Image 1 (cartoon, one colour):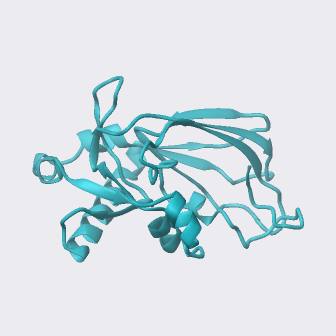
Image 2 (cartoon, rainbow, N blue to C red):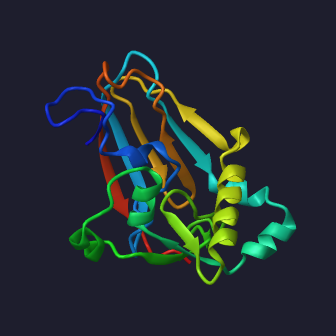
Length: 199
């Protein structure tokens, strides 16, 4: 369940799933990340609580040629711990880290069905392998800023019963906290389908 409900079942601003409100692709911190996600709206606020999607294929295609050459062949560590830190969430436990150790994926991956090149970044992307920390942070930040420009983004305005399915191999997404979280319930059921190793 993706929800703004606390342990008492009531709406709260003290979210445990704070990472949902940052640009990410589901399960990229797994060695075999997800192919797709399905999200089914069960309870919605009267307005707001939208979900945004950013097209990483369009974003890659629009990069300057020099940037495409710069990022070609680079690998990025995806880490659950890094994304929790960025989201201001408590760090994972030692057991959780053993279950989800950091993994490497290509910064530019090829879609296994279309062959299109897409950026594979987002909140779970910790750092570029072999690159100084400051340079890595700047590059990932610049790419994310580029990739989430309005021309690459679709905003879904939820209606009761909506079922939205998307391809995690070529999209980033995030929820918007543009509703009164302490007052209105937002409950969605999520299913994530395992994919293949990025290349």
